[in-house]
Image 1 (cartoon, rainbow, N blue to C red):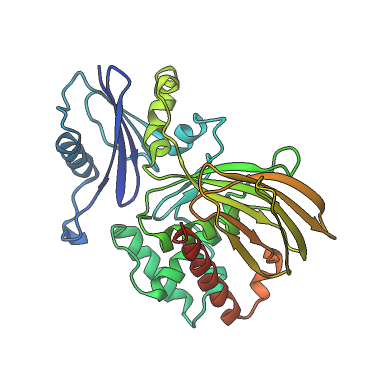
Image 2: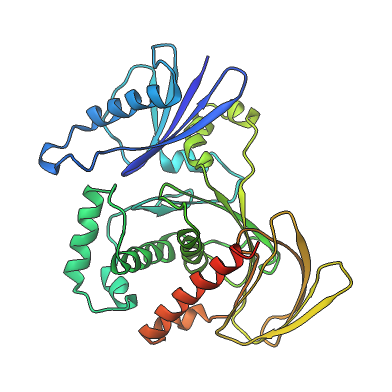
Length: 355
């Protein structure tokens, strides 16, 4: 019989419908209408039942007693629905092991341990912004966003506030712990319930991930665009054997990032007989187009890190060499921080449009 697996987040939910023949469909839906005032907000049970009703229409199914429903939630909703079993996101994400998976949601960022809204350091966020803002104003902004998570950042001010808010959460609570040789290329899959359907938003999301989670080294970024992993996590927890039978989608390759804070001498061998030689000074950003499915041999020399030769794949943003010193970034002038964010977005977007 069909199985419905739901990733229930603040502001939106993703659902995976698995049919008897193991074919599946992923759907993303908002949880609340912006026309609902908080004073008239429905109960948690009403919200969940409304979601199930919308999924019936979206997925063209009938949610009857025989349909198994599994849902992963950030907190215990206190909801009881016939034939539906709930688990925490912590449990669900841990069951996805050994997939190296990092999850970014609208108001919570986490690894398999999960990180949520409580007890965030707004003073640290305030220090990183490019403009003056009272700490209390920041706190009120995100508390309102916590109540109305369907609101999308529209102004530059809101975008930067949310960017550094999410970076502070991730830096503090879910660092990427390197396994084995730290200089071995690492492939990391990211997923998000946020709307990332435009190149500049995708570039900003990639910067958020790199700045907040990654140590020095070589990274191949992949993006779970449909949120397959999030939506399937409850199924993985409750029926892992069924989960293992499903063919995973081909995650979108965003490209390779070399994250080394030093002066670099570089050589690219694309296998065509032509060798590209260039230098990247410390504190700079270098990008080179390279399509998904292609790879090159990259040689990097550095006084601090030594010499390395790696095969690096391409993607939406090709190859990126970032030589900023992240440990000293907080000491950079605000104007320099803002300039780098804009430079990162402009360069990566220009690479993606070069194809």
